[in-house]
Image (tube, rainbow, N blue to C red; front, side, top):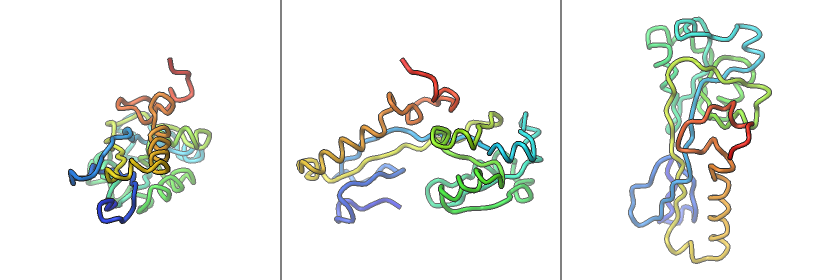
Length: 183
């Protein structure tokens, strides 16, 4: 849900929807890109799908929540066969990652997961690219005047710097490229 920085619900918020209120400062930090991933143990047990036609015989993890709903799993499975191919449904991104990492099925994850769990999960390069989400930093204008809040805002901006962390770039960069040096 969107944080209410105007009503002092918090001073600074990071969220996946741009706030509509013009009285807050909204700074776009970057973009989250999503793609299919499977764990190495899943691939050893069930194989790696090699084509869009092949994907229909595989098991999937589906995340359903208010912000990062993986409706694209049904799109990948083309609706009618989706129900029979969903191995588990979760309602949080952490549970989604844990289920994919445990080998319960193929799932849609943020591409940055490879940077942290690269030895346990691998990208699946089939089907359509899934959607992206912008990441927003929001705060009230007077918060920036506080030295401590200003330091926090600057630090938050630095951890989403696409030059250091390419997975937050506007353009899609394949997770295999994250380990290669960038110029």
